[in-house]
Structures are given as C-alpha cells and as structure tokens.
Image (cartoon, rainbow, N blue to C red; front, side):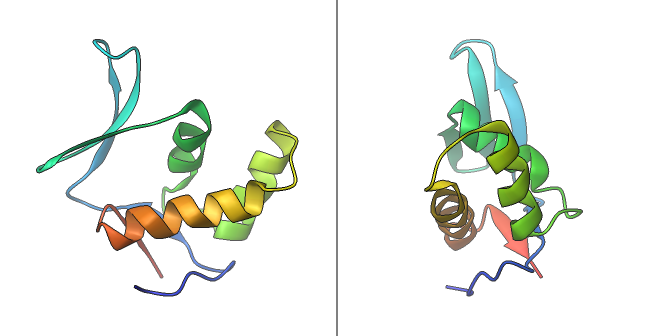
Length: 91
C-alpha cells in the first residue's frame, strides 16, 4: 500500500478507463479483469483523478458539491482502495 497524502495527484491507471455503461445505467471503471460499478459520488471523484488535481483539491471540489463531514475520509478511502487494486496511481 502506497500512503496517500493530501498533496498526492491521482490518475486512473493506464489499464483502466471510466465509461458509461448503458446496461447498468451508470458509470463504471473498466479494467482487463473486470469492472467496478460506481456511485454518482465515486464517479465525481474519478473524473477528477485525471493527473491534474491533488487529493486536497478533489476533496474541496466534492465539499462544494456535496454537504457532509465525512467527505475527506470517503474520498481518501476510495482513492486508496482503487490504488491498492492498481486502478489508480498517484505521485
């Protein structure tokens, strides 16, 4: 597990891609071994995981859009989980 800091800049790994799935009626993260079905919030996080936003900037953007005290914890947990699976990378 690579530690995630607020200054980390996540990006979807080259083997994965964010795509709309017409059958499921929602966005999914596709990769060679399968897919991850995404909630609307997770989709918003992944759209910002483009290599141009830090974790802190992603959290700030989500805080503007959604109200809640757990946003930072949830964003970090999602990014860390997908990173552990090799679906996100950061530097």
